[in-house]
Amino acid sequence: MSGGELLYFELDLTGQLVEVCRKEMGRDIACLGVAPIPKGRQRARFLAVGDYDNTVRMVSLDSGDNFASLAVLALPAPPESLCILKMRGHSASDPSAATLYLNIGLQNGVLMRTVLDRITGELTDTRTRFLGSRPVRLFRTKVQGQPGVLALSSRPWLCYNYQQRFQLTPLSYTSLEYGSNFTSEQCPEGIVATTANTLR
Image (cartoon, rainbow, N blue to C red; front, side, top):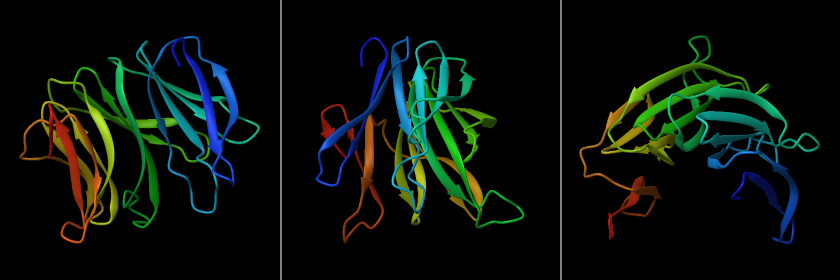
């Protein structure tokens, strides 16, 4: 909320929203990113909070430990968008092992990607890439049945795994503003997006 107050809700068994907790962050919040829910659990473990003071804070969503601060990452520019994603194939010893990544789109057109520890919430091994002249907006998608990220700046990019290697590929398409996964019988893996007042 304006002023930096975070409110966390969950759906109960009847489908009603229940407020779990709230916290005053003390600064306006630019963007949020919720981690995927691990198999066998009912709630996500982490929340990423992007601030206008050029930081991203990892906080806990564990019951009894809500909004406890776990890690802080300083950024070179204000964050525009956050996306936490689990991707496989990055461990040489175990290609089937999945790694949790925090993807950060910055307002200066840079994409940052950092490893998120699944136990402690610590952030390590940060990589950066300039994507374009516009702020980077991030959207979850699927690529060959695996999680991926659609990154939109002055041109669209697709982040995904191919042959156990991370790929960041520019799409030969016009600039887009928002995007989402789209699946149909004719198009098993597609993207629906908007640009200006048109749907693509």
